[in-house]
Length: 219
Image (cartoon, rainbow, N blue to C red; front, side, top):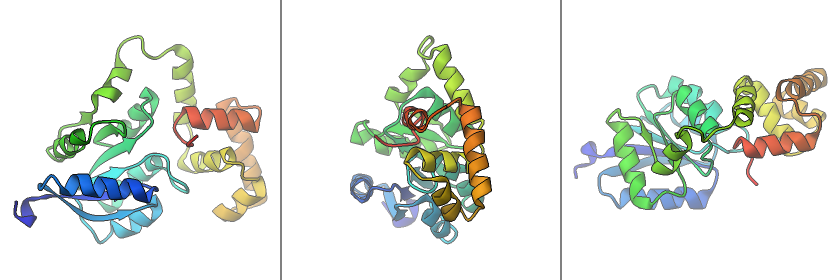
């Protein structure tokens, strides 16, 4: 297929071996060209200012800036690109949030390799895509009231609160949070207190468990 007719794809995933595997799988199709990749959402934002991919493969759980919080930022620098989330997290709350924030599709990393090409082609044509593994989570009765309540709490966080939440969940102190985010120690403490109230997490262990359950922290 001529180069100008192939779908251009940009990959964002913090694991280099995953990026390499995705690059190999997609280029083998013959209808897709990889125009770049990055192991950081922040670095990808800089790169996407000059590159113009048709589709962006975006992981959710990454250090610094999560894939979810990167969606609206990517939409600003690459408004014409379609975003396909690629994650090990298959919970309905993560999928719903990603799609509501502007993602065009959501693919499980446990999907068959052939499904990856299908998903890329689907979102490029303007058709939202959910892999069958993901779609099963939306069947009636799959989500109980407790899960729905937790999702509502997480969804209420601002991008900055989510960032602080992730940092606290991996064991960062208030001082470390303040230094890395270039905010005052008092502001960092205030964020921590607000998070505990919003998420109803009394201890650091509660924060960790919630972060893992909601797909914001790898186990």
